Amino acid sequence: MQTKRMTFPGRFLPYALLAPQVIVTLIFFIWPAGQALYQSLLREDAFGLRTTFVGLENFARLFRDGAYLNSLSVTVVFAVGTTLLSMSVALLLASTVNRMIRSRSTYTTLLVWPYAIAPAIAGVLWWFIFNPSIGIVPYILDMVGYQWNHRNSGADAMMLVIFAAAWKQISYNFLFFLAGLQSIPQSLIEASAIDGASPMKRFWTIVFPLLTPTTFFLMVVNVVYAMFDTFGIIHATTQGGPAQATNTLVYKVYADGFVGLNLGSSAAQSVILMAIVVALTVVQFRFIERRVNY
Amino acid sequence: MVENRPWANFFAHLTLMIGVAVVVFPVYVALVASTQAPGDLLRGTLPMLPGAHGIENFTRMWQSGVSNAGAPPAGMMLWNSFVMAMAITIGKLSISLLSAFAIVYFRFRFRMFFFWLIFITLMLPVEVRIIPTFQVVADLNMLNSFAGLSIPLIASATATFLFRQFFMTIPEEMLEAARVDGAGPLKFFKDILMPLSVTNIAALFVIMFIYGWNQYLWPLLITTDPDYYTIVMGIQRMTSEENPQWHLIMAAVVMAALPPVLVILFMQRLFVKGLTETEK
Image (cartoon, rainbow over all chains, first blue to last red; front, side, top):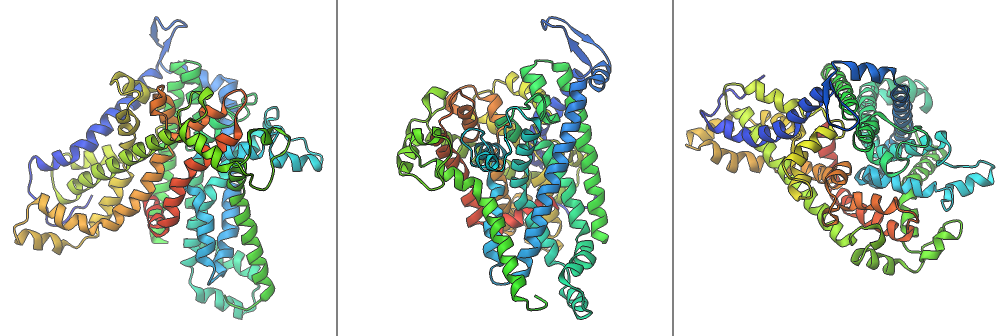
C-alpha cells in the first residue's frame, strides 16, 4: 500500500492518532464478532444453566431446519424482487430525466428525497396505505375484486415489504443511473441517430450496454441493501409473518436471539451472514477494480 | 436531445410526473392522515384531502405524545434523535480524519495490519452481529445512555477509507513546503489538511447525519427507558399497540421524516457528492 513519498517522523504520534478508531473497532466490532464465532460452537440447555461445546452442530442443525431454509428462500425472493423493481423504475426515470434540459434539476430534487426516510418509517407509511381496514389501496383493489390482506396472505405481505423497500431505494439507484447516463458520450448517440436508429433501438443497443458497469454495481449494492438494511421495514410492519412468509435472514437472527433466546443458533446464523457479507464485498471490490480499466 | 419530437417530450413529462406522484404518494397520505380528527380514520376509508385538525394533532404529539403507548412526547424523542445523530456523525468524522492522517502521512510498524483491521469493519452492518454487540454494551453498563446509543455505531471504516483516498490526491509539495517552513505534523493537519478537506467533510456530514438519524434496531434494543427513545423507534412502539391512533402516529411520522429530508433538499449538491463518493 502506498504512502506519501515524504512522511513525518514519529514514534508514538501515529499510534495515538489511530488509537480512538482502533479501540472502538476492537471493543464493538472484533470482540463481538469473535463472541459470535465462539457462541456458534456452543449450546445452552433449556434453563441456561449449562453450556456444552457442540462443534459445528449448530450449523448442521440450521441446514436441516425447515424454518431456516424457508428464511433463505424468503430472503432470495425479497432481495430479487426489491432489486428488480427498484432498479427498473429508477432506470426508466433516470433515462427520461436525462432527456430533459431545463427541468432536469427540478425532477431530480423531487425524486431523491426518499433516501432520507428511515426504513422503519418507509415500512409504516406503506403499511398504512395498504392497511386492510382503512388503507386507500385495498379500497381500490376491492373495487376490481381483489381482497388484499397482508395479515393472512403471505404473498400480500411479501409484496408489501418489497414495495416499501424498493420505494426507499429508487432515489439511490436513480442518482447512480443518471450519473452513468451522463458519462455516455453524446456523439455516439448522435451518430446512431444519423444512421436512422429509433430512440428505443438506440437505448437497447448503445446506452444500455454502456451502462453495464453501473448496473452491475447497483445490483450488488441493492442485494446488500435488501439483505441487511431492511430490518426496520420488516420489524415495523409484518414482524416476519404471516406464518414466516417475510422472515428474512437478518430478521431471524434477531428473532431467534432476542425473542426465542436460542443464542447458539442465532450466533451460527450471524456467522453465516458475516460470510455472505464478506463474499459480497469481495465481489464488489473485484468488480470496481475492473470498472477502472473499463 | 438528438431530434425534436414534441409527442416524445410529452410522454417523457407524463412518465416523470407519474413517477414523482408514486414517490410522493405515501408521504402525502401521511400528511393528510395527520390532519384528521381521531374518529375520521375509523370510518372506513381515509379522506384524500387534508382535514382541519393538523395543528391540534401536531401540538398534542409534540407536547404529550401517545401516553398510553408509553411513548414520550415527540419533542423529546426528536431531541434524542438529534443528539444521537450528531454524536455519531461527529464521532465518525473525527476518529476517521485522525486515523486516515496517521495511515497516509506516517510510516510505522503494523501500518498495514491496522489498515486491514479498520477496513474489515467496512463490511459488517451492526444488524448482522447484533446479539454479541448488545452483550458487550450491556457488560459495559452502557444501556440507556447516549454513549451506548452512539459509540458502538461510530466503528465504521467508510469515512476513514474515503479520507485516505482524498489525502492521497493532495500534492506532495504541500507537505514538503510545510516541512521546509518548519511545521510539525499537528500543525500541518490543522492548518493545511483540514481546510483542504472542508467540502469532503461537509459531504460526509450529510450522509452520516442521515445514517445516524435513521438508526432503528440499535436504539430499539438498548433503550428501555423512555427518556432515551428516539423518534424512529418510538413510532414503532406506537404502531404496535392494540388500537393505533393513526392521526397522531402520522404526525410523528411527518416530524421524524422532516429533518433528514430538509437536509437533503437544502444540501443536495453535498448529498450527491457524499453518496457517490462513499460508495465508489
